[in-house]
Image (cartoon, rainbow, N blue to C red; front, side, top):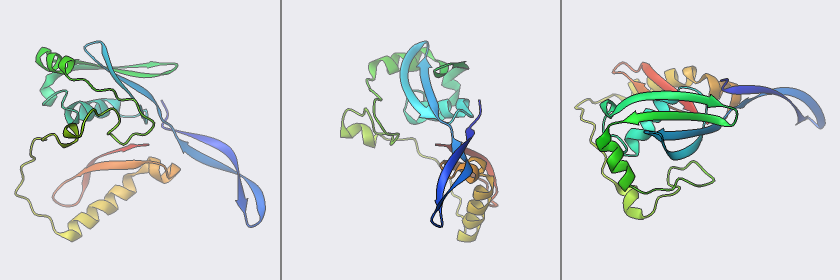
Length: 176
């Protein structure tokens, strides 16, 4: 699916109403299922949903590593998209013991959390002895800003990126 729509709109410009065209970022309901059991419905940009599902699964602690995910199917329907993940039986058993309701009106990431202890779960450390100069980080941000196509069209998305040791952005994802 498309990640944006072009709409006709009206704007106030120097004391007059003028017609204009504007790009609007799309977001759709995305249902995440694990071993055919519904877990959450999120609103997301309908692009690169496999990466979204992998990142969500790891950061939520549903899986520990990529190898715990055996298959990912993306099923588009009239009312949204279902991302169906097949995960290892040990991860699925642990998931059934975990209870979380992800209902809420915002995408802050805290909605449905049952207690404060869940906010401060220990994440695995990322080990690195690398030290990056500020100039290299600034170069990375410049590269990132050039790659944010949806943000540049709509002004309504954020991005996350992976940067190498030279300041080149090697992976970048945008979302509403």
